[in-house]
Image (spheres, rainbow, N blue to C red):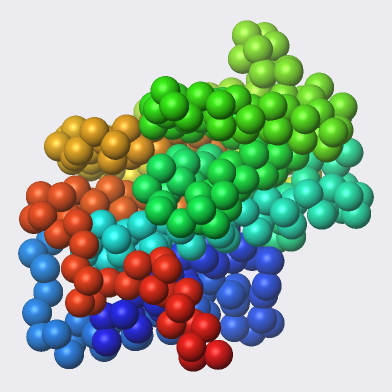
Length: 402
């Protein structure tokens, strides 16, 4: 039963980078549909098992965060938006719990990472296709994304998948798997650049630290091949307008408004000073700040500021303690995994400075995986062959089942 639950969970993780591509009217995105099914299967597995794992301290902190989000319905500036956020956060907490219950071994966690990379690579290919088809985001001449995605959110998805891909390449024994994970990195880099996300490029630079971090001297040739291939692909595909936008990073930081972000942040800080302790309510930043662009109230475009304004000092402290304890878990891991998750969390920390990402599935997936992997190494459960199929066994089972 655990194998079935793990497969359902992997199917859900695969949909994370493509969740908005397929939307069923009246039902929702493919990620929501698969997520509900996966949660049901995993919950049934846990009930049959008859026991649950003791939650990590970080799980408790995220629970406290969700409770604070829920209680903010009492003082929120916008009841409807806060109610929507409560529902989203409850689902995200459920996802984090299920990952901790089902992906209890290092091999199971590698399977989840593998399907994340497959989904992200598929999304990157779809982004290249959107560029070739001339389907720009909001009719922009230089920003492209998989259908239904905001380019900034998609860029951060690629950023978080890149370290996983290079880690799996170093762990895989199959030549086919190593080849796929090797190629997936330049494909996601191209997808990242096509989004035109400047914050994504900065966090992507941090994510690429995984290459020298996990590189061995004997692999210098393959790394050089990757760099050459990526450069050729980038030069051949990325349009000049995207380069112009990306190279404007320094100017925007020093003298610009970072696409009006500094003005939004200034307005947000004014609201924080008026409601410093508990904030204006989860999701209520647009209503409280009332910074409108083209008739649309804008979010904070900064995860740290978003939490500070919406949940006050209390919420910001819970988030800060959570991140601090997560770093502590990372430092307790073996060297390779320590580098993987340190670079991943660093990339996230850089990327969310220009994006509202605290209520996104990729954020909660990242923290859930770090907790699960730290626990796997603490308990010595790197692999349990009775319950966890390897990727090769997985493919064989799928071929036999037709």
